[in-house]
Image (cartoon, rainbow, N blue to C red; front, side, top):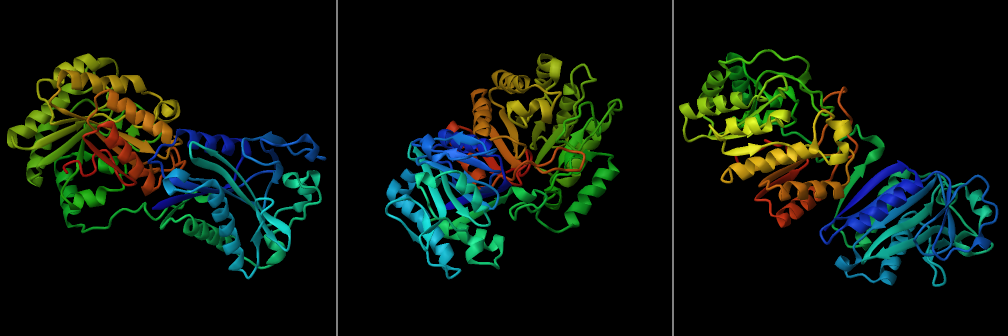
Length: 491
């Protein structure tokens, strides 16, 4: 079983508190367990049983009421927060045993530095020579935990003098830096993660480090394959003056797909009438449609001996039908040369021409009709400001209602600032609008001009999306870091 460990750096307490509470309230039996590692700016947190008498002289440090057990404590720079978001029922753990395992993880870590530490029967936490080095406070709801451990590493212990820490007068405290003068913080962090995973019986750790998002995690890797077929595809594209979305959008899988002899063709030019902030395709005023493009596309597809082809396009809001007629002409030309070929189209939303576009598409139906929802509703204004979430859902549903025998498909990018719960809500919206197939993939910033990655979603989370999608009733789900809407579409 895998545990996800997220490293955040210094992070606002109230924001973190709200997010881990929301994570716990919205999780289900399939949600992966997580540990969050971070530090907070100076803050005092008062537990549910907290008494005002233990607040001595807080000064300019804010006091925040929280829902964990215990009294008041201090968090601040140099203190490692280890928030454990665990499904105890799934692990068959009681609360007392869980607390003991967390304490033992810190004890084991300190022992690796030849520091003898122990827990206490009278007060949770870890002690060295009767001085507290690590506090513990938890909230258990619906069998799941949040909050966790606070380990003093290089903490300024003077802040504890402003309170009675954990409700104890004259409690002595210590920190790791006092016991070990020469240590590597990254090594300490790794040992704690390893011991927590081991004691909680996880066989695998997936790390996500938000402190340096420019450094991609190990699972974000394009496959390096033979260039022979890639060169062949490129030559044919140049010969027939065609574009692929693989090249224009800087898709990370383009070398792999080209080497397999497949490509997603982009029709109607390479200039989009919209400016979505995630997309690398040029925007501006497009050229008039090329009436010979369908014929050249069909010849290229025949030359590549494809059995499955995907056709997409730039947005063409300048056209009365949004480009629907050009799509049908391309489908007709391709099938005229090879009636057995399967054609998938990945269309824009056709904006104000939805009904007309659907009437036109009826003349030459694809085998799969795809339109990407792209992201969750609240990100539309910042990610794709010229699009409308409801219009996209309506297009997919209308097509399925008119042509029930044609498979419908949509795709979601993750890593743009959405939560996993929002992804599930969007998946549910797609399913209730009769979408048959779904892709979920990691957003990767294609250029410096595009919106940056906000988070890297782990393989375990992608498996989670896949599990839930199957339960929702999608006929096919492709969910993974390198998945794109047309990646392995033929399979």
